[in-house]
Image (cartoon, rainbow, N blue to C red; front, side):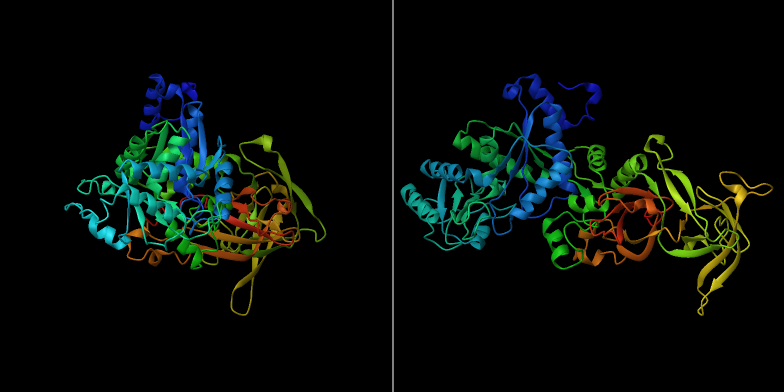
Amino acid sequence: MPNPENTPAPNFIRSIVARDIEANKNDGQVVTRFPPEPNGFLHIGHAKSICLNFGIAEEFKGRCNLRFDDTNPEKESVEFMHAIERDVHWLGFQWHKICHASDYFDQLYDYAVQLIRDGKAYVDSLSAEQIREYRGTLTEPGKPSPDRNRPVAESLALFEAMRNGDFSDGAYVLRAKIDMASPNINMRDPTLYRIRRTHHHRTGGDWCLYPMYDYTHCISDAIEGITHSLCTLEFEDHRPLYDWVLEQLQTPSHPQQIEFARLSLEYTVMSKRKLHQLVSEGHVHDWDDPRMPTIAGLRRAGYTPAAIRDFCERIGVTKKDAWIQMAVLENCIREDLNDHAPRAMAVLRPLRVVLENYPEDQVEQLQAGNHPQRPEMGTRNIPFSRVLLIEQEDFSDNPPPKYKRLVEGGEVRLRNAYVIKCHAVIRDETGQVTELRCSYDPETLGKKPEGRKVKGVIHWLSEAHAKPAELRLYDRLFNIPNPESLPDFRDALNPHSLEILPDGKVEASLAEARPGSRYQFERTGYFCLDPDSSQDRLVFNRTVTLRDTWAKQS
């Protein structure tokens, strides 16, 4: 057992596993699996399952397999498989082995033949629509298919012909023979196999007969010796079928299925179908768009593996569905980056400042710490010269009450530098402010000015040394907490979820930054260098603002 001091917060699944080990169930072994279908990119909901399955295995000195549920080749691809492997590894987990449901196609077929021989399955000619009609409702029992009592020999012959490709898609299916009057609709002779003449990304054209998920999943678990099959609550009603299949086949092991609540996160959607829709219809740029809830999107936005794992631990594991506030996820990355991200200065919307009393050819190299609480992160040089850039919003003609930034005739301190005073405002023909004429007080570097109190502090850059940067200000993709509550979730898309500032500037120390590097741009927010960057033009994505700006709107 692990050291209690290092053990994560208890939850009902950890308690079950701990009791099983204490009782020496499964010879004291713990084997879990994370079984995604490779039909899209993983999202934050999958991250919860990854952290749970891999975390349980790690905590109890067991092992966890990464298994691809690749039984629906029409929607699956190698690209998605590689993306899933990359995301799991990036989150900090290492699988015991990689498995595929397609690894077991021969065994699954043989098991199906056994069910037919035992009178537990039959080949049915009803169409999918007819099967739905015959299944009944929650209040009315189903009625048996005319093929339910098809002779075993005939079903065996037809099933082999299905395997050999003698029939077209939909001509026949294989169904389990259970109970058409069962109160659990999943037990009313569920479909086990269907014909699909589709190329499979791993088996090619070897198969035109593919098993259904409910049939495949439990047998795959048993083959791999999974001890605890952890899945979300929508599979709770499928557990009797999971157990029925394993009991009829008397598989070498019988894993225990345990359900937990899936993650429902505000201001986003988790349905893969809807995520596909967002990508295919161009509402986002791709699966790794920083507005997407995908792990790839969060990574590109600047989220860290530690922040995502912290989030999954904070929300816990329960048996009751609940909505999680987006602020919980955002606060996790804020706390992580506040502790670990180096500081830098960037000007999003530059306004020129000329220090008229500063020597024209002089350049000072001022020093600034890379982190206010972590001196071990070192310092950097920040060039200071006659012409500076500040944020447009750090100057006002008509300042509101308690405004502590620059006004005409007023003073402000430049962060890590001098106090400056504005003497004149230059405007263009439309009246827009284009330049400020100021002076600096040379006695105020690291000192308070004598005889007066300067309250405001703003950030700045030396115009000659600043690097051009495109700044992408990402925000929540939807403007209501539950977009799926609308008839069309796309009606809740936030038209302001991305603002691109093409003329931003960042300090010279960032010229050598690598994609994925994360910074706190002082007074502005947390940003991550995007792969679109080049030596001539840096591109930064805003990960999150310094504070929760949505709290004021709620």
